[in-house]
Each structure stands twice: as C-alpha cells, then as structure tokens.
Image (cartoon, rainbow, N blue to C red; front, top):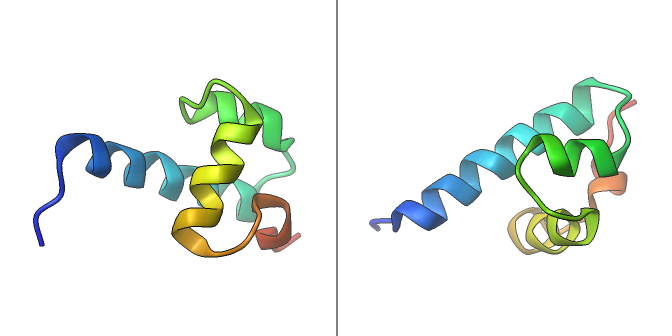
Length: 61
C-alpha cells in the first residue's frame, strides 16, 4: 500500500513522539511541539488512532 507524503510524514512524527515518550522524561506538551504538533491534543488524537493508546499510557518510565 502506498502512502501519501502527508501520511508518511505523520507516521515519522508519531514514531519520533513514541520514541521520546518511551525514552525521555519530557512532558507530552513539549514532545508534541518537538514533533510538529500544534497542541498536545493533536498529538494525542493522532497517537491513539495509530497505536490504540494514549501517549501517557505508552510511557515505559
């Protein structure tokens, strides 16, 4: 299945957010901004759609 450039870029941003959530102590708000989301709610919505859990629930720390 071929992804649009927009979908590919979103997947990259979400992968980076997931890595930061699992391997840092940064707040979700800061991670959202670092990954190009305008608000933590935008990250949370996209994150739930892709991974099936909230960003705070996916922390390994």
